[in-house]
Image (cartoon, rainbow, N blue to C red):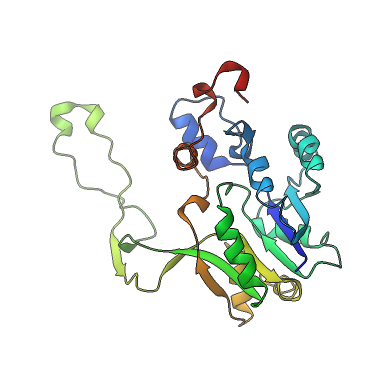
Length: 271
């Protein structure tokens, strides 16, 4: 195989920044810039693929806005260029726009395209080996984990009039605020349900055809392939392939990978 890896990295990390500020970190930055063992999350993600003989091309799709792209390049271009990465403008609003933009930069020599979330830097190499081995024989392969929790579908909107808090009159305003509460509409049978991860690997012809559809709204690339009626093979994922969405996720990943945060390292070893 000759694989091109596309890493969409145009997002604004709004949920991450909001969660960090809720924790009291007013100077919160993009999750891709956060320290993970002395290197930014984005660089750790890219490094997953740099030593693979079957990966010939790595494309990072950054912000679409010119000023934001200039700032992105200032933070990352020097190191990524050393790693052989091509940086291209991504999408304005959606992940699939970034992937679609990066697809136009895939060299003709590539036989496969892998799409990987920029905020999944902890993928273990045995999982990558399983994926790439399967992709040599199947046109669409994704990793996933079985869902262990009970899954419930809720009403689309919170209750407008949540039950009154009986302690509010006793404890005052501190107890008067009630979090949004939604009714359970059904409990979903979790048998055969899995949580999809990345990287997702496709034959180049298949992913190109998937992105030629008129409706590209999706939360992952496999959904676009499924929309064509083509089969997608699921193989075993790994909990370490988690996606960083909040600061709590970053702390959990550091613990899994046995990496210290910058404040826990000696001053001269901090990022």
